Image 1 (cartoon, rainbow over the protein chains, first blue to last red):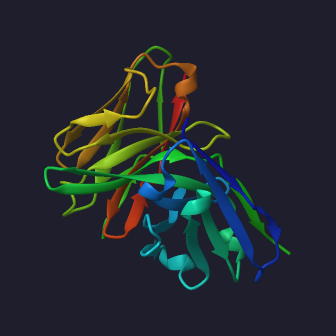
Image 2 (image 1 turned 180 degrees about the horizontal axis):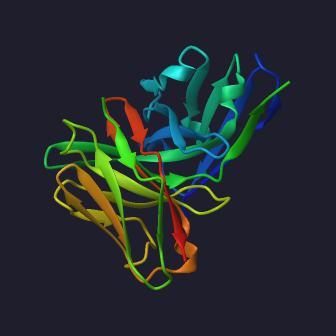
Length: 125
Length: 111
């Protein structure tokens, strides 16, 4: 069974740091792009970051560039999100998601086909 | 700029059908999308990927009651024989070079 389990969330003061982890099982972790997606309280889903299978490429939403770093350890089947200089607006449930690739009629799509249960990050003094 | 637009809310009666819409921004009408469901207090669940010609591939265990279709820049999710557990938020999602985009989500109420 494919499973993603996030951990590491909690309460942190503005300006602080936190490291999220995602433990993957049930599939060949090193074969997939992976992502972090967040959801602020009462709001919709927002993509945060992507990382390629070997970690050689990553992408971020503009609002976290320079503050967040996505990384992975394929030997440990784990995905990470290092979050620095946290702000109140980073308060959200953070989900780990597996990314699948599809190409059809010349159109490419990277989509999320498996999600974790999420971990809550609260940034508050 | 790639944007996905969804109506904030929809409602339909138990046992009826409902069609949710996701509209791609101008210049992006050929894009494929994915649909995701989020039941209250749960993480999202992948439902299907949907191409511009209406062909779609559902995730494992997704009931036949869920289907997808397309017309121009619009992508649809149809749920038939509505059940109480279908009451949830539904998000469409697509991709452009290096980043993913979500629609704002549609909150579905089953009456």
